[in-house]
Each structure stands twice: as C-alpha cells, then as structure tokens.
Image (cartoon, rainbow, N blue to C red; front, top):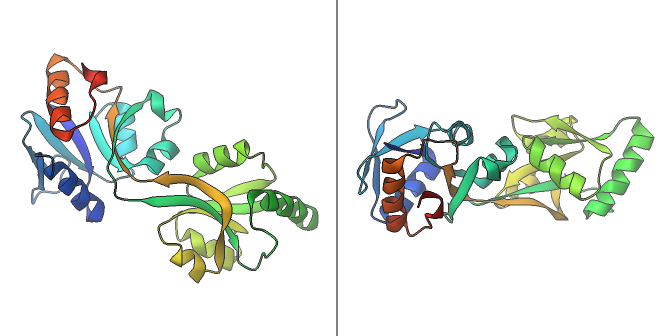
Length: 235
C-alpha cells in the first residue's frame, strides 16, 4: 500500500485534490474523518491519509506515509537536515506565502538587515536586553539571521497572531508568513527590503524512511508517470 498524506481540510486540500485530479489521479474525502478517510483512483494500491499540514512533515520523517503534500516552510522548519529525511518531488504551484522579517513602520531608519543589526545593538545598549523577534519559525529564522551575521536578538515564541505582538509589547519585530502583506500593514509593520527568509508553496515530498519494497517502488514509478515527475529514487 502506497500511503499519500494530504492536508485534511480547507483550500489546501481542495487544491491538492485538483492538482492530482488534473493528472488522472482522483482523490476524494469520505464522510468518515478518521485517518484513512479517503480514496485514491487512477493508481491501484494507493491510500489517502488525511492529516493536518503541520503533521505531514513528522509523518514523512517517521516513514509512516510514503508521500506527503505540505508547505515547504513546514518541512524546513520541523525537520532538521530535511533533505536527508525527505525528497522533494514536485512544486505544486499553490499555497504560496513568504516568510519574512518585519519591523515597526515608525522605524524610519531601519529598512535592511544591516539596519536591523545596528538597531538591535542600540536596543540592547539602551534597554539592557536583546531585541525580541516573535515567530513560529525558530529554526528558519535563526539559520537565516546567523547566515547574515546577526546575533544581537532573541526569538520569542508566538502561537497566536504574530503580527500583533509588537502592538501588545511582547516583541519589537516579527518573522512571519505573509501572502499580501495587508495584515502586516494593518498592524503598522513593514517588511525589510532584504528580509525574505523563504518563499513557501505546497510541495510533494517522498519519505526516505518509509518502507519501499518492490511493490511500492513499482506503484511509485506508475504514479510518477501519471504525475509527470521524476522517479529516480524508486527505480
């Protein structure tokens, strides 16, 4: 059985169904909302596994599903050394969003990461603690800022509305996902000109840790041909 993990609700599920359907692989959700509550037609021996988008990286890494569709931001955030755990098979062209760094719009002298670095040093000198950046994406933000040589900050966890943390005084800046930037502007924030961390989109991944026996590899080659993607990993 070839297990395919798909987001369990909303626009992401619908667009995933449409993407597969346009390539001759029909997916449908049953009335039962349990884990295997769905069907795949067009490839024999495939099962639909409905999960939250955030669960799919974990299930891929554990090898409990063979394939999974989720945001590239979630895979990179949740899986350390993600390339060793999953193979990127196809960019699906929907679910696009940018992970960015934004600061208060009133910081007129802060437009770039270099400016942020200077502001962070001044903030620490003036307040006695490091500038706080609210985010749900600790791994990606830390790796990005380290690569840019910025160290005088601290990340604070945000599981709610990240854009509101500056207004409520729990952070001085944010690193968050945005599509249009409207919510950021509504909260009087601006994106740094070079503050793009990752451009995310829905992506099809294969799990390296899953069981790939002869039958499952043959199913994957058949599915790959239908989807028009490479199958070098499974040949």
